[in-house]
Figure 1 (cartoon, rainbow, N blue to C red):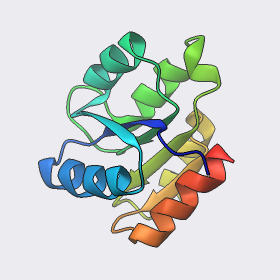
Figure 2 (tube, helix red, strand yellow):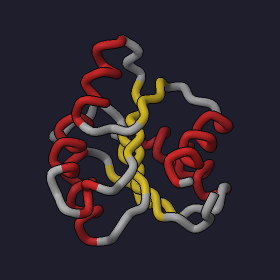
Figure 3 (tube, rainbow, N blue to C red):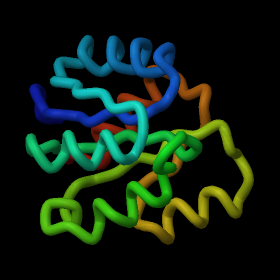
Figure 4 (cartoon, helix red, strand yellow):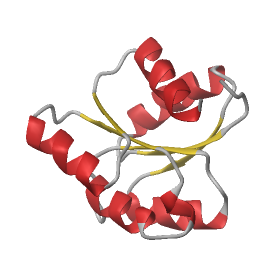
Length: 123
């Protein structure tokens, strides 16, 4: 897997942002964080990202709306996206994949499962 990729991590939980950010940085990646979809759109439009990991339920703009808007942009068509949520119902997974997420993972996710997911989308 390529090292030094730039990942945009989107979640309204400071704990999740800190924990997953630490894990991703330990894997050798650059991480930018955002607390909701609106902030994520702003940051991703200013600086190219190689991968997005986003929560589903967030204030202002949730993960589904964010993914739909990002996929509608030129850069968004080719950016791999992992939806990471506490929602484990099949309809949540289906909605995320239908909006354009490439993978759907359920929190809590192990470090090894997250690393494998990132590697699979970047290989």
